[in-house]
View 1 (cartoon, rainbow, N blue to C red):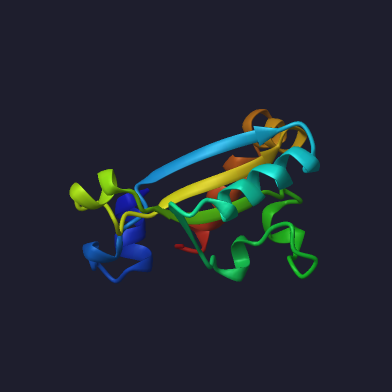
View 2: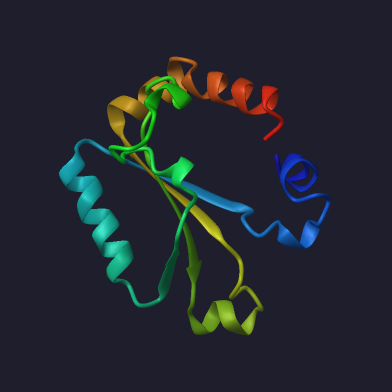
Length: 125
């Protein structure tokens, strides 16, 4: 996927590839997801960056047909601790995905992510 991004999205500029780390957190309900999101936002060692509107899948303005009804929260964050600064990792972006369990199960087992990947590849994104 990293090479696809370099060639498809970044016009072969490898220095624009800054998001090589991703994690997914899965919650039983929206209250848990919301609590986690608030904790991330409130942590002074985490910078949350503005994501592209196409990644705001719980927004009322989001067209769920674009993701076959799938919804999640995606954040790009930078960890700003002494440890990351000393190692030159201050600009590294980490993608954090927050999922509701029922959606995540559909994504994992129901082929939802496969459909998203096929669409992305067809559009050369």
